Length: 406
View 1 (cartoon, rainbow, N blue to C red):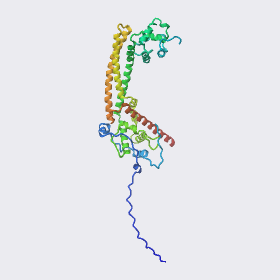
View 2: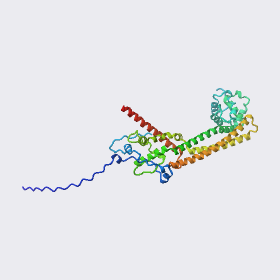
View 3: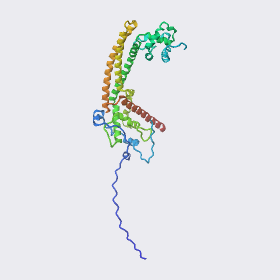
View 4: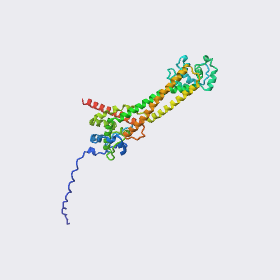
């Protein structure tokens, strides 16, 4: 048998080695989570504080961003955030008798007669506060009641206390007009005061926000961080209401949010800004105040003042021969109306001013002109509260670590 041996094939030269790959920071090459926010257009940026905002891109800790907000590979286990988020028969019907009887509870025997003094007082009475007078107005005498109780005007002592009280009410001329006038007179100053205080609170909150340099600097840092996380769709500014979209965003652990991240980063880079929550007290107090509702309240007060004037004029025309107590009341009521009118003029000016101030504030922060004040202030209030809690969490963790070290 013949065997044929093949000769050894020629050696093929190996291709040259590829050039060395430049060393990169692997942590910075990871994909980051998206920071969701609303972008401002060029016109909004130009008319807001963002136009003069400082660029903080070189002041932020990119490693810290990567550590807490990089996207974990599918094959790596990770914690998932939990989603939190009496014996005499009554003349009155039972219902009216029961409700008028409640008013009489606790009053002295002469309490029923005291009603005449009450309806001739321009200030709220100790025995008959506004709530009781409101009930009396609801169950005030009808024309049938007046005719019925006329039969008992000289027999009041034989009546049940509730019927006796109704008998007293029936003897007061134009009681309906008087009650309407008195309740408005009593309640008007309180409504004026409450509306004025709310307008003052809002004015202070708007002023504090407009001059809050800490808040502006904090927004600059957030913008820089967001533009790192959203590298493919950066922006030159965002509205403050976008804070609600990411303030609770979780990091790699369930107990570390974007607010915690800001605290850690600012402690390292710019600890003074952490004090910003201490400048937000007036804003927190206004988180439930709606400017449009206040403006409506001012209009309601104007309408009430018109009713007061009308009721007083009507009562004066009806009481042909007022007694001394009534004369004194009518004089004091007229004087009160003059005071109320002056206060209303001031309140209307305050209302106009706060609307202008708030409109400028919205423009300053790049918000839409229709944004309700309670929505803006509640977002900032929530953020301030959560930032404070994050600060406390970080401080508590530091103390714990210190104790473990020792």
